[in-house]
Image (cartoon, rainbow, N blue to C red; front, side, top):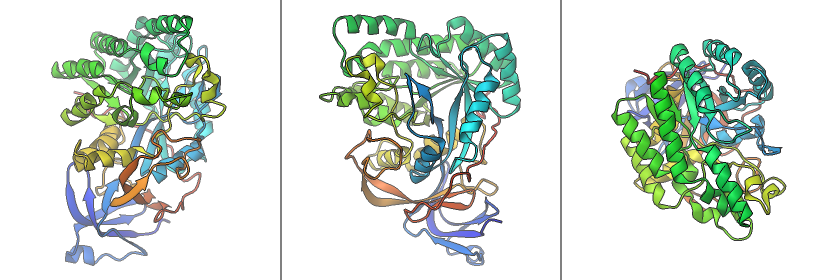
Length: 467
């Protein structure tokens, strides 16, 4: 039986409102809100009272793009579901949606079962799954219908990584047609992988082996071309489309055009594209390998267009694409050949704080912060209003956030299982103080009080934005 809790005196911030209110939690859910200081709020009694005076009371973050324990490039992501979800909680995220992987020649069910086995009993916070579809055939297409029925309602395809996850246009079209019928949402890694492989081969032949060339061969135009092609294929199929990790201003233009035409096309970006750039990829020695991810970091001038897209709602979600590989022994696999550097960055712990810094810096409003990090991802992937808001009936996934605390990001103090931080030395204003997941304390005044196995698998309904 969970403890009855009252959170008093904080500024409750959701995607739609800001109100000084007390929050009553019963049986793992939000039971009521009442304006602070009113007789209604004053009448509440509880075993646990949390003083949030001077703090924000916000919904737990919803990170819909993580890769825990992902096998990639001859190694595996360094965060397990246990370490990764614990780090997420430290960063104010209370729900992740990870990617189960279908191996070529195997069924979707095999892949989903494997990911359930990795996660079950190990997560500190709630979790769901998307399905990576690597092998489109008649059996796979039928399985997509079954997965939607049981709450795996989104499917990721890759226009990149030939020989690994790659799908050709015909396979993509078939999957999109199926999702148009079953209500699923296709998520697209939009880069022209066939053309990129040519550029990789040519760069290596010229002796261009350093990490910075990873960014140079994965050209912004090839992200824009693939984004455009994915949009047109979705239009032909009559299907919705969600483009993951948008990094290039040219790709944002394609998304904005499609949305102006009234298409059900959505875009996600990530903190690394908002705060890092090709300057990081070009750091001396082999330091640039820490920043190798795909889509790649872009020159700084792309950042303004991404922020603009977030303000105009041409980009709707900020997720992390958290896929950490240690510098020692993992990133180092690509010394002398940038194409062998495992692709991915750590970030599940940093997202909420970095986006609060964007509020401080004037890029976005407080409510937009909650919208792009909590409410919209929950709606996009069928979890709202259970997740992503503070309202009666919602899960009591609540963060007490100190907007004035200052911190310096560092691998020495973070909780992700990786030996470097992509944001090392960055000063941020704002910090998570206390985190509740379904009414249970996971972080208590900057101390971890959660445990592996608290996190529950969350089946999802279909996208809540479709016309």
